[in-house]
Length: 140
Image 1 (cartoon, rainbow, N blue to C red):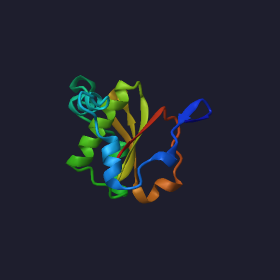
Image 2: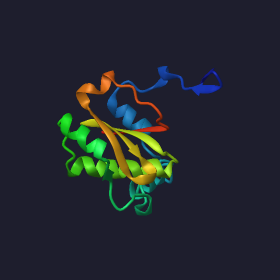
Image 3: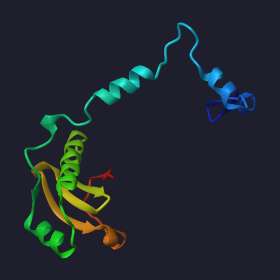
Image 4: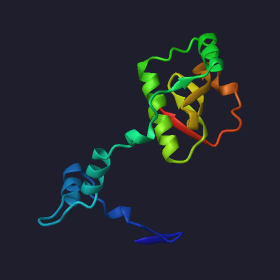
């Protein structure tokens, strides 16, 4: 093994060249346990957001309603649930004034008040500067 910047790099020249050999080389031997199996199962079964982290509902300020209408952004059930989940995750990480980016739009949210402050549609995101933001989350 080679050592680069205190990281051990395996000798890649010794890797099997065909798929069958690779599968055999990577297979667990009798009595061996995968060190990743427990981690994967625990992460998949554990909810990412605790119900107590998410408020009862997501509020939309009058300014945000105006922006949603002007920019033809539809806040449907799927988008609402993304915002609700994002606010929960942001609250868990200590966010207060945050930017939530989805496939449809970018939303500035006040996490403490569960409120969407403003919204920018996907087509106009490139030209905007978002200020006074302490955190950002992508909810694609």
